[in-house]
Image 1 (cartoon, rainbow, N blue to C red):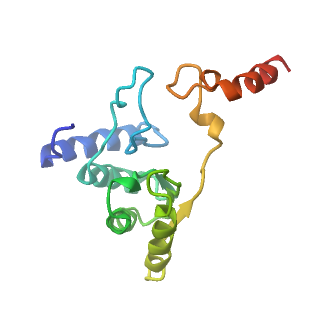
Image 2: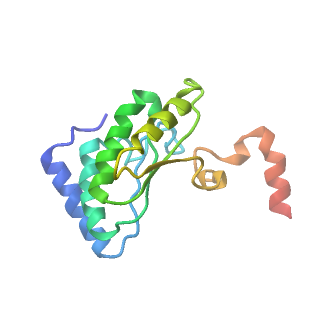
Length: 167
């Protein structure tokens, strides 16, 4: 479990990311879903940011990159309406489009429908620019030889991967 997001920590995030964006950084990435782990199974160092920390980074981002933003949120851990309310606050600070990854979660198979419906209702409000997005990048970008999701570890994919590598 991470330490609480104190005002000092949030200020440090804001300063750090303001400097990085001023130096030419093009983006910011963190993980809030349980599948983002190292090959040993530990959570990645940036796992589990608190909302206050993300808002601090949004402050730094908004001054430099007021464009589209993408979020990957673990909707399975609670009420999707609360997550979308947070996204509204985040988006308002950025004054930019915000997209979030919409996925089906095995333990809650209808959650995607609920989340999409809440999102559609919220987007009827003025200045709410939040859109659901399904698989924002090719799944191959999530798999790799040094990652915990290695396609060669999956028996059903192994033959396909090897034949593709030989081609």
